[in-house]
Image (tube, rainbow, N blue to C red; front, side, top):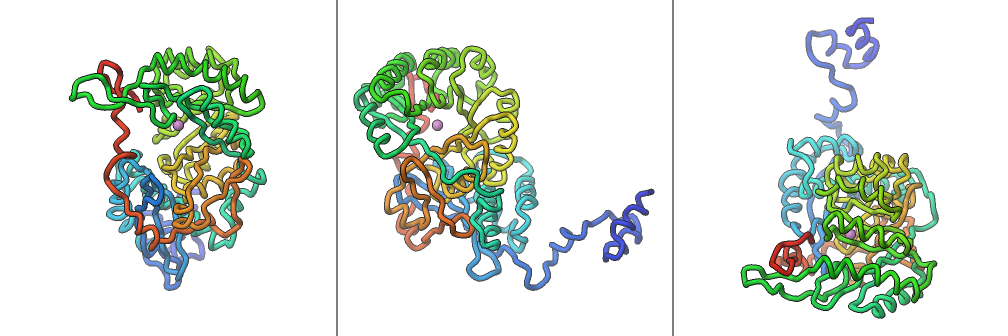
Length: 448
Ligand code: CO
């Protein structure tokens, strides 16, 4: 069959047949071509905007997509807290006009066209903006279906979502107390971080001190050697104090030289971690193979990932055990589904990034993904305060170490815009400016 024959058959009986036979014009597929002049009554995107708010300590960005159907809108997390206003600009100045009048039903098509629309792709600013829109479109679709989002993603694989929480302290005893307190609340997975006097260890809540360098080198001091020596001591102490049953996790936060991270992972093997997080920076990804050859400590990686090339080889090479992408850094719900599906075939489990700089809207999206993903591993969790919960009615509840999903259609979460406006984001310390300040004893800047 020649091409014209084929196209004639394909388009027989449709308005398209005339187009194809009329001359050398390119084929316009029937569905999408119609989108340029929407029929009256079809659902349209009427407004897209970024909402910035800071009801807790952390500056949050949420995208709201409104439609031509009164009262029908969606929300999506676009929080890149360190550069929050740049994301708002990308949403308000670029994606809003790009999306105006389009059909919110075509989520994948809109994702791909937003992605191509800047020509230069990826990067945290543009991906956060895109991700916020993406999750909002899923919210809209699930609301229209009258179903909680997890139903559209394949339905529940589990009844609720196991979470891990953060224990820390500036002494071995303080960390153990923190672990026992969290265990008493029913949590089975706990990340442990130890603060050291005069050394600004990650995740340990303070403990930093000014660098002894000159005024030119102001910042917090970090001694990688002292940190590395402290971690096996912490796990040794904890296994004696809190027992074997609780699942313990630790985050290196890419702070060690690669060979030191590999050495630490080996030393920690005997303490049976649930996972060791960010042992290496994305820039040092070539070392994962060496790490894998040395020990069987489970490895979690990915909160900094932004470009598919950062995770493809680590997953397909079976070099990591948990994928930890920040959803709004990689493309929202649509991207997370694909990443989870890729990981499924390599027995890599999900452990999406979930600290306080994932908004409650982002956490809600993660609950739905986690319920519907067979190869779910664990969810990092933040306990939001009452003010945040008032600004975001429907914020997922945490009980007995589980995050629970409400059964409302869509993401099941809302944003009280009037209340959110009472907590404007401010461009001042402490949160935003703590990054890029960590220095070695000679003043050398360190990874965060
Ligand atoms: Co982390």
